[in-house]
Image (cartoon, rainbow, N blue to C red; front, top):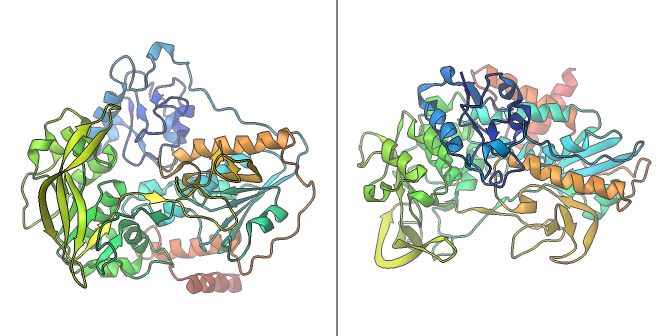
Length: 549
């Protein structure tokens, strides 16, 4: 009875190291780990011990006999990855070690006392805190500009992906470790400076992510009726900066430029039955608005073809099995390829629109040229493209002569993210990230190292990978920091540093009170939680809970 990795896989590789027979790949030391959509269990080598199930933080691994009907495809996906002698990763199975090699962790000298500030409270920050707190004598203070932690796990993961949000249980374990502290509602550049952080701590690690969207760079992009998929995600997830609906829900058709996982999330959520969403942690204001929504169709526009689609196979599998939504591909001639994504869409999509059904329409080989409209959006003009393969193997979209306008009053862009500068911290405007070498921040691109300053996550490597990718990324940065301590490049003060005065910040005890309130309010309605989305209301909840103790 082999086990199977399913859709919620976060890719943090905990299962890889728990497996006693090294049958889960790719492992973090293998070349395709950074780009893999998930990890896969070899059905031939699996010994059914269940160690991976216990290690998985999001409940993504099941015995094959307990798969739901819409999860059976993952049996094939796991097996396909391991088919052939190279197992998809360039390694002969006979050359693999008996167990996956555990990444080494640098140890600091006995008796070292180290205070580290981590700016940002998302997955990269918490994975870094976890690695640091494995050392004796280390204290970590995690700061975030929001009054709530967990970053995109709270404000980015779709509400109907509750299994993925289960990684919050791992974060709670990290937060409970001795030496961990929160300072929430604190923004670098507003409430505290980089220099003040260095004065108060032995080292500072930035985990500020990539909060800004890439631009399309086409005329009309700023017209009323245009927005970003990220804004929509933040809105339905209850981000306190995005309470107002950023899209026109009275439009029958919404057009999204891009076809990555975020685009799929937005399409799926705004087309789902509100009664189904009411069982999730979707924000109350978004649920109320979606109950009045007139949207019947979401069109995802992509420059290239199905084989080059940005969505991952697990996410598309989930959409194809959604009982309330059709996936429509009218360009059936494009689905003849033998690649995995084309085959998936060939078997699971429909060729024509059923007016009675809500639908996601995938439009391939169409590049945005302009958002059409005088005072408001009236449509998106696209130019048809053809594919060319360059000498380096890259497949690019080349504009042709034919153009068309897709009628709509709502255009969203979902074409990737970029980091934004942090006041007082170096920033590479060309690569849109903090310049670094292995997580050590550079004073300028190609320049000298900035003392005692480090970076993890998307701010370090760009917006690539998944939630769990941050685990290995953070380990690399933490090892760099600990190496600097061990070699004397970072000299801990060995005594408490000056207290950081940062205003009315919330600490871990405050967060636990707010978290308990949200969960309690959710249980009353059969939901995982009901989020408090207003900053003042959050403070009131904490204040009331403290007074009641």
